[in-house]
Image (cartoon, rainbow, N blue to C red; front, side, top):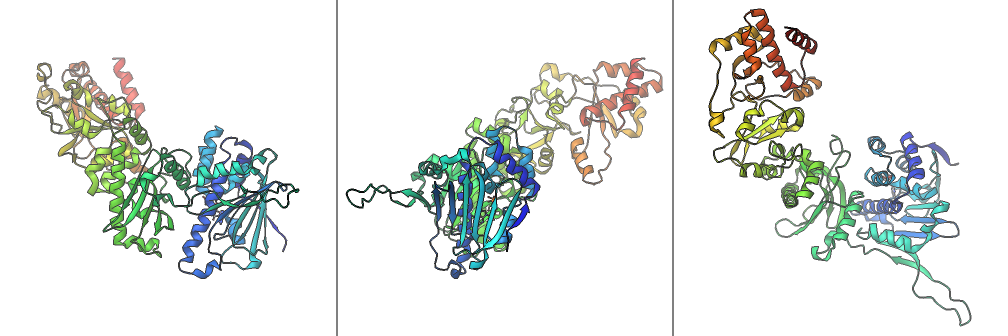
Length: 628
Ligand code: ADP
């Protein structure tokens, strides 16, 4: 059968073009990616062989081999793993999971160093071989296929690939890179050795390099000494997590993280634990520096790598951590689950439940430890704070511990930066304060300039400023912290009493019942009620609502999702000392007064909601008032 020519999926073609022509730094990552793939292929076969030892066909010693051929100008990486059928090669090496590629393409910055870092993260690993090769040939035989059903796949990375069946005696995959003219450095074994040591020292599969041996064997005394080549193991192939913590250096932990996560950057922190007794497991958990692009994508699987008795069982096992800790990378290795455990079995396993509980606690205490370093924690919070805010609702058992990890912008904090913990807030509350005050708004700016804060500022009471959609949801679902209730400063029954009062703030002005009644009559059904406000200093008016409040942002979110949001009516509060209110009350003509009243109400609505139903009408009435 002749080789068939296939076109790459459009995204692949674009990606290949980028890889081949615009990445000049960190070229060695191609080796990390290919060795990772080889090691994955071996892990997969190892797993299958647990229940069907015949699959190994006498070739039970798993290894990865790397060999150069200076004459042919090639570098070959081979493994005796699971291999690929022709269909698998066509599919896996010709297309990529679409969502991933699109996101990858979108996140390219044009900065080559940065862009090359992204490659590994997006699972486009195999294609990185075109960074150094102008032709790649893949020879493979799937463990499921006979000798006649080997595969040869080849491409120059320029839009098409060819593939065909070949005879192949060996199981597994061989990737032959025909090096570009400028990349012949990769024929030097010391260079390969360096790159392998850097990236692959800790994978559990042995990696062998075809190298000149230290000794040479003289044939006879006159003959030139002949270099002798042989396979030399270059990594220690001892799974890193099985070593005692004290024997593993920080650099080793970091390198292992990169292998595990395909991340280019160092992790922010990690926690390595071995537990014996009732439950036996080893866990190695990492917090990345950067949030992955798909942290908020609903269908992506996140999770830990699962090993049972050192054997790789599955990737992205999401059962071991709650959803709000989905950014944590790492692995768990246990002796308490059966080797043939499946995702379905995991779901109902009591052992899994116990592990989840233990790993959640470990993760939270790792974050607690991280929070003691303000600078590092601020970096963490920027990346993952929003995800962590899902925690108090998803995981009531650990609510208090998670709440301690949250950070907020406040009226006494550092601008918009979310840097104040609830513990800080409580510690600096005035003696008489018993509640924790907060304000939800569409943006930080809207919050910080909100009229609701006027009296709080004057009285010196700190207020949490919340401006993310999740904040409203969070505040609606947790009642307090450390025995203190959360109270919205926009709630209609805000009772500050004498809290923070000074002589100056004590004196209360009010309006006559009759004046308030004029507003009520003028506004009629539009408002729930009108009353004199004790929370306003500089603004003429504000709106407050009974019961749970909903910001305009939340309302738009519900509406966009096709949910009916009931029309809310507000109570209008007016500032008895404000010149605008006094000016309005000077109007004797009832139509004129009604114009003023509507204007006072609508500006309060605008300040709170950031938008009006009929802005043109508002402007018209404002213009009318300006002209007298
Ligand atoms: P990823 O490894 O993130 O899935 P890659 O582009 O590196 O992305 O590889 C694509 C797919 O090709 C792999 O998921 C695997 O199915 C297949 N593959 C790559 N290398 C090998 C190999 N050495 N042995 C078997 N299959 C492989």
